[in-house]
Image 1 (cartoon, one colour):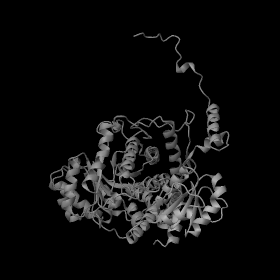
Image 2 (cartoon, helix red, strand yellow):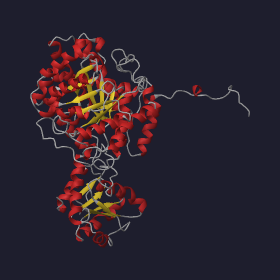
Image 3 (cartoon, one colour):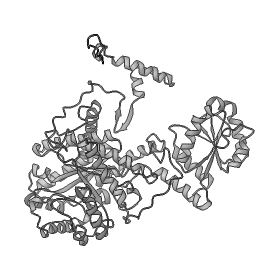
Length: 618
């Protein structure tokens, strides 16, 4: 084997560095070929993506995109992690959530989880979905409380639930200094969920008890999930968590705790979504912002935010729920890379009812695979140094701080909730996002994109009904399309077939295939069954094909050139054959007989709702 000498070889260093202008010129050329004649910064903007909160993801980041110094892990401002070692020692805390009213069934689920990788338990106690306080001891039978920390989600049953849990620790001989976990007191979060007037008395009392008797136990949770689940943006979620945390600091210090002691009583809970970069940036920004609050309060040493990340329920779908496994994997990845101390992966069937053993197994194994097989926890702040992540962290922190200041000017978190400011702001955010969902600018795989009308439904035991409260609503990304699909299901149950749409493809396959595929995907999202037989029609065959297909509506699919030649005549024939509505796949034009145009960016929900209405599908 002959080894060539290094001398004379061309290495990367021998090539001139391309300039930003050269890159931009190449981008302009590509965009020009796609029909967009833009130059300069407009070319770069054409490839940018709006993220909400006034943030934009650009197509290219360089070393010029500087941001604030993130510091080192374990040191203020804690952007790179609250601990110097990050999660490298033991990984993040795998915290499974359980909401089962039956103590015996709950006990079986808890023991199964703990035997297979779960390291802490998050329990709903009291209320229609939680285990009764009287059944807590039975539910925790066989659980080693000194090894498996318990986090309570008790709502207005906080006092009896805490007393029962602490009594159980004492009965089992667990030393007070060995007790870990969180009591989960969150009166402002409960107000957000129920609309009731906040009462911080019990939360403050238990914080004092923890401070003096249980050094390893946190009393309060700053839960940002109510705001995320109502449709809030990442910046709104962060801003409201800051306002809540500050309100708790004021109450705790007024009760005699020092600022540092008060900070150590708080755990922060955030949603992790399938947008892994936004999740990473959100958790990093949250630590930076809280470090600033702690610094101003004179508690710089206690400014490391303890974070619990929960995969988003908003992103979970009822149709094609198997895709939720992919969503939660991405969310868990973002939470782990973002430096969360504890991560809860919701089971893929979370939106369908009570999860089964298989779903819980997949949920807990998601964290295990990412830590043990992907080695995700072996590096502290893996995203650190990424120009995009650092810039996004900085911009998100700025937007969140601005909203936090708005809330403080409105009188603080309690006043902002009471006045309706929080609800109105989040409702406006969700309305804007809903428009993007309806237009499929934010696609939902398996629902608004690539739906499977033949999928077998996944049945689960219904979760206990929770009475509607007067607090913030709970939303889902699949809401509008789920409504359409439910109407299609009812039509199928009543008639034996789904609503059908005839795809009137004009010209050869090379001409109509792209738009026919687009239209078929679009109509399936609303529960319509596309009929594309024969493959191509014209004015002489369209009426017969439409009648034979048994559809009630039709959609023309072809090129703009063929539309100009044939659309009017074919639309007329379809109408004469009984088509109640004629669509055209393409940009709006002036074609006689065409009622509605469907194209990339159109309001799909409005178009398909109208079609079902005209067909009389309830």
